[in-house]
Image (cartoon, rainbow, N blue to C red):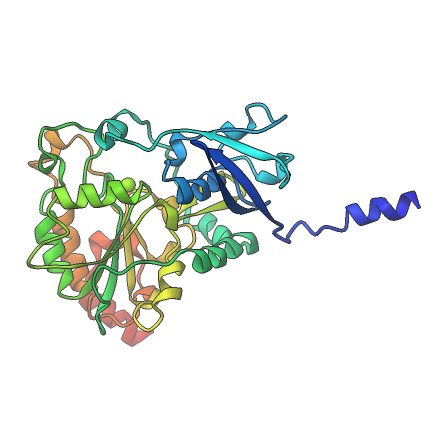
Length: 337
Ligand code: MG
């Protein structure tokens, strides 16, 4: 009898993502969130953010008998004895002064660089594919402007890519990367543009509005995405971290976008972990006051976007070599291949 019950316990497959519904008390109200055991604490905080609007980094979670475990965002929920019958308490406030908030806060995760070979392992892991499938089901991208037939897709990070969020200035335009409007206007002729930031939608809208990106006569932004659209992935060498899976966009707009016509700019390679080939690591724009007069990254990238805009299949490119790209020699190589 004893051996029978122990085998029943161990029969749970580690690959099966067991779902759990948790009750979270916050500000006198109860909310329910659904998570999986292979989610992290960081993922749980994102689910809580969905129902409360309290940013993950603002949340302090309290739960019986778990001590300070819920302060570690990378911890898997399976390592914490959570029960659906017990209620969790969240303490945290909705950010009021978003600029103060952003300037004070340290970067969420230490920067680390992934090797391309490593990202291949990450995207192929079944557990990460499962997370992507769940995000596709749960998160619907809201279009600000219709997708345009025949256009490619350009996905852009904000912080350090289009804007220096760590410097301070009286006018946010002083922190805008040089040539931003020229770059977006030029790109728009051949690409639909989506902007995807790891911060909150409120911050994305505020920042892009202040930089004059949302109401420009020469280009329209197809969609804005924030941290809620990201997934937490597991890797062999860097533990768990968040990334921006383009598969979410490809699954929701399959008649318009695919790996063949999408390119994404970000200053962190790890954000491309689920789609390494589509990512181009942009030089970070930091110290805006010192570098504003010399930074030409967006101008150079405009030329690259133009050069590759007639190529039917962007998966043939290695964006690590973008600065040396030559369309003629690319075509010659293709003919000879
Ligand atoms: Mg960035």
